[in-house]
Length: 269
Image (cartoon, rainbow, N blue to C red; front, side, top):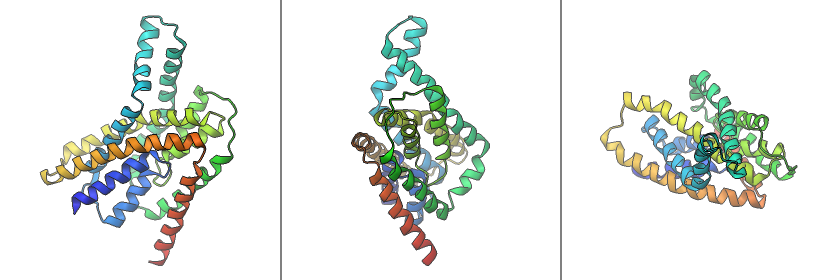
């Protein structure tokens, strides 16, 4: 039974990490529904690692060029305009990551306490729903990424540390509000998540080293990780298609339904 729960939560993590419906909020909800709290930090780290791999696979071409760009331009003095753009993306990702790093280090303990507050999750999902439903009215104004816009998008990512606030949803919404092409901001949103997810995983490794998972939990961890990786990859492909079609509001209606249902359940149980 615990294996089935691990697979379900791995699926929830993989889908909700990238779809604009809040992975943290859904993990809190499903952990409550399934009464699955035993895996703790170890399970969280492993499934996040699975979604990290899915981003690396989906955007492997862009990531390779972002890695090559500094060496090609700084050392080989390349003037390739495409490499210059990817070098700029390196800078933008660094800038966008700063707010999350500050929040993560200064408010780590208070934020972790919020993950036990399911009522907050339901109210936060209302915020996500509002953003996604409103996104259909935002107009493209031919703006490109810049240092200032990257910082604002990074602030949105930091705000999404709250369970129930979608990271991808809030960053895409802010980017579109700034007039950036929705497909470009969606791709940037996924790529900019790499340092934040990787950093959070590294920070929590210490807890795993101090309290390693029991041998009986290894199968659950592996299963959850694989499911999170596979479902995360297909969630990315699907969301890119949804963004291209300008249909983000469908996720807003979903979050609205979950929020209202959750609030009714909470206050009438």
